Length: 506
Ligand code: B12
Ligand code: SF4
Image 1 (cartoon, rainbow, N blue to C red):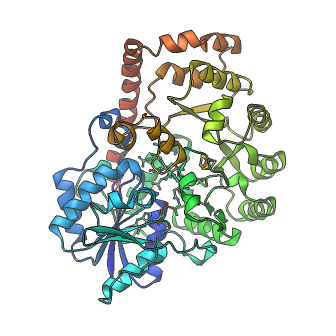
Image 2 (cartoon, rainbow, N blue to C red):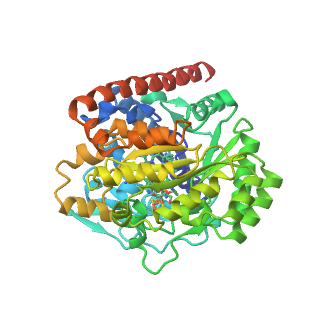
Image 3 (spheres, helix red, strand yellow):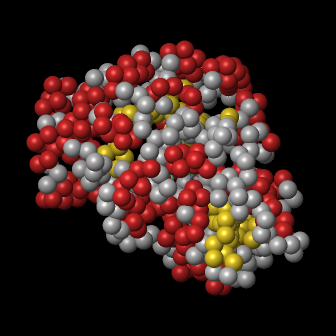
């Protein structure tokens, strides 16, 4: 059967969608991949209204899906509104079943069934292949594990299949480029993803630095996370699989085979990002094997994520020796009560010790990236000050990424916030919320300065609760936000011009 798979994500990595595509191909199906990359979706204008596709783009996607036997769409929560629009349009204009999958479909299948014929919960390789097979052979798909659908207006949810433990059984993610299409900045018409267009789009990824000769390849060595932070999707997902091994790593040989394949296909990709939830949580034996093979066969600089409790000197030594250059680590808060709320296990003292340890590896490590969560309505100015103070106890340089807290549906924190009456309008507060749009811009700037060369005593003064409150007053907020918007629109224009350049190359 021919299946169209659509990715609404801002970047064309769409790892999960590519995994599905190659699996379907390995089961004898044909796949057309459609990417709708557009970094504008993170702009403030979409806080008050949904990001939707133009009528021309909808018509073009519909034309591309003609002749397929099944259409699959992937989504995270923040793309719900545009995916619903696209799916409704496809179902109105084509007589082809539409199936949704991805994290939001897993969390809220009933809501998704308002706009889709089928919903896949959890990992989708097997369910999607079986769905395609049953539809192709005229059988009924009612018994397929992980699938939800409606009968007589009632949503039915089939049981979940156990998690696949042997990830090596899956083929490499689909980077064939054949039958791959994209709409730059979500502008029609869809074009073929030529090698030149692929290169330009990868270079336009905010994590790439083409000016430094760094164009990224992003992938994952594992699925799952050993932690269960109350605001994170893993908190929801691991409850779906009680008693099962939740964190699973690819074999080193399989991971290296993928990277080798990518190097051969795309020699212009010069920097690897392992976006596993916590690559550092891999056992030392695994990391040793990885380091040896990576050094011998790949040798590119790389970036990965670590949970503070998983960082050890031995792991840092090993990985920096073979190319680890950027380490991203969640610090999230310096406040003891927020730490308990988040169910984060590392204490403030452990975070500072880990920060000091990491600092000893700069260079070859670049200044590490520390993630912090801000805009938490449960936090007092004193909690916020303790976060700034904790950061100031870690030796500079480092870069702070401040993310605005979103109550992701399905998580413990979402339940708590709903009970506490903090959620009035989910679309506005959650679905359209921009993780990068801080309500407290002063705090965001202050956090950025912590890892810089600014004198620590001055930053301690600037982190006074009174100042934090004062700069958070509506008028100050408006002023600071206008300045921030100027910066964001410059950035978006830059992405736009890169994509235009790519048009010429294509
Ligand atoms: C890598 C990653 C990214 C990358 C790349 C994302 C991409 N486009 O591929 C980057 C860094 C760009 C990114 C960005 C964001 N991310 Co992100 N990201 C991840 C991460 C770590 C891995 C995703 C992944 O590849 N997983 C592995 C694959 C195999 O799983 P999968 O994608 O879920 O796909 C499987 C199933 O879901 C299913 N499936 C998926 N699609 C479909 C479609 C069909 C038809 C079917 C049948 C099945 C199916 O089958 C797949 C294979 O088994 C996840 C956390 C996680 N561990 O999953 C967060 C995660 C998806 N991100 C999240 C968020 C919030 C974001 C941001 C919004 C954050 C931000 N702005 O700061 C942005 C969005 C950017 C944008 N505008 O697109 C949240 C989503 C929460 C939610 N409910 O929506 C997650 C779950 C993190 C978390 N722990 O909470 N992300
Ligand atoms: S460590 Fe990160 S990925 Fe893992 S559960 Fe916590 S927030 Fe989620």
